[in-house]
Amino acid sequence: MGVYVKSSACISARNTFGETDLSEHGLQTEKLMAREPVYSMIAPAVLRRMGKAVRMTCGAVSKLNLESNPVNGIVIGTANGGMEDCIRFLNQIVQYDEGTLTPTNFVQSTPNAIASTIGMNLQCHGYNITHVHRGNAFENALLDALMYLDESKNTSLLLGGIDEISDYNYNIERLGGWYKKEIPVNGLYETKTEGSIAGEGCAVFCVSNQPQNALFEIVDVSTMHSTDVDAVQSGIKQFCSKHNVNFSETMLLSGHNGDSRNETLHHAVENIFNQSTVIRYKHFFGEFPTVAALALWLIGHAATNSGILPDHFYLCKTEKKIKNYIICNHYKGYQHGFILARSCS
Image 1 (cartoon, rainbow, N blue to C red):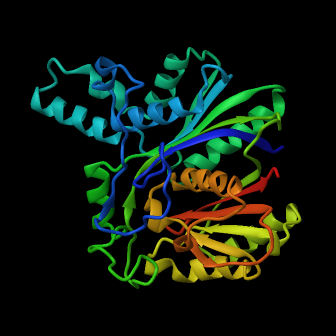
Image 2 (cartoon, rainbow, N blue to C red):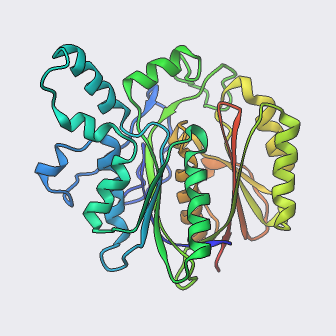
């Protein structure tokens, strides 16, 4: 049931677009805002009407060279879509007393604006769907892509995960204690306080059921909802057992986010992989519902660089060659996603 990643692109708070540099990892602000490129590939008149989530994803898609390698469908995962434009539109309703409103903010505010805009740009009239499931949005989009490609031979899809930091969402989540009240000067994982660091970004992939010239293979994905640490441990073990994972040849991409309320969960998950190479990535990308998409992009970078990443990612290393990559992500400690990928080399 696995699929093959042919190309990928990522826009994040770090230098992941264009000239990639993964060495920087400091935390200077309370929000890891995306470093948007100059969108020379998008006409200025079109660009100024785009919401942030839409323009980031369209910009990232331009790196996949899909014009010469067309896709048959588009599958996007996002928790909040264009939430900032949604709030602007709602404010206009009040400001203009439900009179003549600017349609742009409304059009850009719906989550499926991302997939539909990409579809129009690429003239892709096939399968087009957006999954909006909070912390499992990208995992469900990936599951959809796996099933679609399993049923349709010689097919390619555009798969993506995207979320932006909106002031509305950020303020609500900060009041809920999900973001730290001050910058963790000693490092995200060493600061034993509640909350994490807000992030945003997008990652897009051209995925196919044909293995030729693939970066890596996505083998399977699974999700679960639980606050029971033992149940989560059992779920991960079953997932690994299903695919006969050799832990000594595996890299775990841990969803550790520095939130003290989930320390028991973080350590329970990482302890399962005590024979594996373990890395953490949320100090680099920040915490947001679809950050697993960016972790998947990171797998592609590692897989094409002999499994090697800068030292700041690593919790522990093994000497064995990395063949398996497992993302164990969670959102707010109750939505869990497990993704298994394998090197094609």
